[in-house]
Image (tube, rainbow, N blue to C red):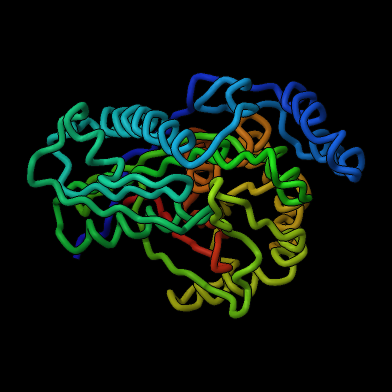
Length: 349
């Protein structure tokens, strides 16, 4: 069987760029008088390692009264535009058109769209009437990696077919005025909006082969990360234990994923991680004995875009590919479940 090949990776961000200092000032005006612990928590805006982020709406919009109708309207508008932008770039980079796509995998967990995003973008992009649609919800920060893994398996099932995977996350739409919690303050300091797309095909041609993929889900960890749904919108579930959890548990989990393919951590030439936050990056460097500073591409993406959930790992991969990847790279992210997801990429012969 021909192995699935990753033909291209492309990314996109929405039009509004916010400096981290401006967000910190706005958050102080909103929360300081209502949340007694704000001054202590506000340090996260300075220590997060983030200098700017992108959003689908201007900053003033986020301080108006928002409910599900307003958030959903912003999601449908912004997510479709980002879907088209990222997908178009990925297809162009692969030398293909939307009409060449046989299957579209859409990964998103920050809004609700039925019909889903690929259906809403189909006419403008030019998908065929017989294109197969696979929308996926609920993977959170692991969605970009898991989506690429799914695209690889679908491509391998039908050699020669073209699979387009697009992940779009508008995390800023979960901003809450009413949530006077540490998790909400940290989310306000971390999250941004963005999209990424990959083109995959099982063929002899392609820069990178998708060798294998795998996941590890820890039992009794549902409360580490996710959404709490209420009449106002999504409320973030964001446990402070994520960095120490990653430091203690990620290397054994990834070792297990590699072991199922007959490999060890020593067989990986480069790790590419989802940069969930500055402390998470440091924890991963410790967990995999990479040395502080080894994940500088992850730090650069976090600084320039913040945590965009699922697309973020693919922003790192895009930059790593531009630098040139070694023989074997392992792309890994953590997400709700609590789950680690990995995809091994090798330079195609």
